[in-house]
Image (cartoon, rainbow, N blue to C red; front, side):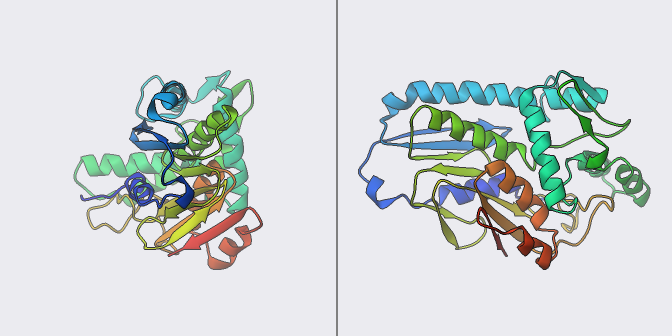
Length: 296
């Protein structure tokens, strides 16, 4: 099964950045690494690599700390422990912040953004490992375990109903992008591009390419996230993508891809995930002074 993941598409997009003209002769500290298993990068204007080294070390430490909360691939992460046990007492505040934002995005999208679809991923993964299509019975069971409204959380604990599990892949990259951008802003930096799976910029005049298209947009102190309906395919025929219609397991997407520009990379991340499924009228209803939607 050949796949081009959503994160890879975003990396291609970030690699196509056109630099602000005034910065062409300026120093720039750069970093490349990993965030939640995907390629990540930073560009910090007006700092040499040596000047930026202490900041980049601080970024790496913060990334490691956030990985320990949100990763689905670390057996000791807070999210994996929650999914394994169905309950997480005294959860990290960052996890509560993401769940609170997810609740907002869930409401804004009429329930189409739903982090509780992890059982659907598991059903397709199990079928794929066995070399067979995912059965209707397996999908029905998985759908019965979805519904973000059934997830309870507060400062004391996060509680899942038996069999439920969460994936935060549609929002955690954006949240981490925001956190790194905020860390660098707090250090007094004003011209930065952060790509931690989603893109956020500090400063003005950053030209960013939209994944899979020739289109570019200018970002001024904003973030952008792009979701591709078939960015990762889950069946041998390449028809079923990684963005699910909650409650039904899979539905024909309304569009091939969607990008959202917003103040927050986490919100842009969540909304772009749902946007590939949303009817046109609902999609346009999302737009406002601080949210812009671009579709293909």
